[in-house]
Image 1 (tube, one colour):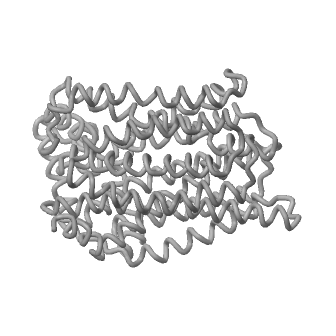
Image 2 (tube, rainbow, N blue to C red):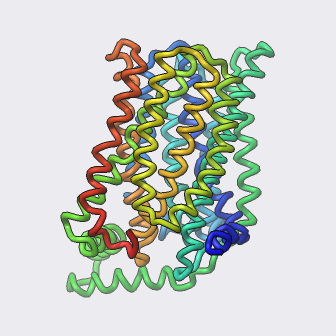
Length: 452
């Protein structure tokens, strides 16, 4: 009976809106992730160059720094017509769209610096939109609706993977179609097609309800005034100090005060380390698929289409699992699954090209990733102080992204150092999961999230 009630939560219309928000958040990763990597690979650039190009993902690790700006500054004209959150999303979507138009005119071998610079702009716009997408997603659910919040986390993950997987399918098939049709700059043309998807997402965004938060600015100003009073004066300098302290310092102090220094550092260590192994695998996976002999069409079918279906199913199941057993237990299960999945890729590397083993490895990877992501999103959502939801969520999410992006940028160099020994590479990515689970084990009984 409880299982049926949990499943029925997914029928809430708000879950559909959260699904769309997730898709908007996940789609840019297609552009600066698999599409950019394969584009550079087919232009003849080295694995190390492709790996280091992934450093542009590093901006996701620092978007909490400007989260207060997104929370407080209104976009002229757009905010009044669309609402605070949607205005920021639309502005960032326009930025990404214009960047794709610029990409369509670039030759990677001749203008690599410009190409990466535009990719950095896309990453910054995407990281900025994530701040307000997460805030708008949380604001769809009332504070006391804990099960709906867990279901919303699952739907956000489904949406993210939908945007990422289906966007990837369209990108790969479009690129292969244009290549077979004899279009010389087939990737550049593909990016124009992807721009159409961005326009359609913005149309869909207009159907996402933005709750009216009439006293948000009032509460923010009240915090500033409280700090100004403690400073003892009111001038430009103290106003600036009060603004910075209230919007950035306050959430950080609140987090450490709530958990204690030792537990807080343990939490941050776990968040930083949890998905490093998965990121190393993900950054080089499409290069591995290409080197082992799979075509773009095969990659699209097995890695994107089948992967998306599997991810959707097991993300929803992961949400139910997390509601039943708690996010911490779910993360232990997901961590073990991630390690075992990476070993499957090692077997594929040693055996050679095998469509069956490829399908099994990809499906297993998507299952573990689905469980891990749902648990992770639910976990950090439970950790945040609702007084500082946007900034604390952005901070924790950024720290998690930092581990996946900064360290994983050396993935290509690691493969080169191993002289292309993909099997050993995947074994090492499996071992990378262990430190995070040790951190979680040490703090699991002391975390103040209301559930274990």
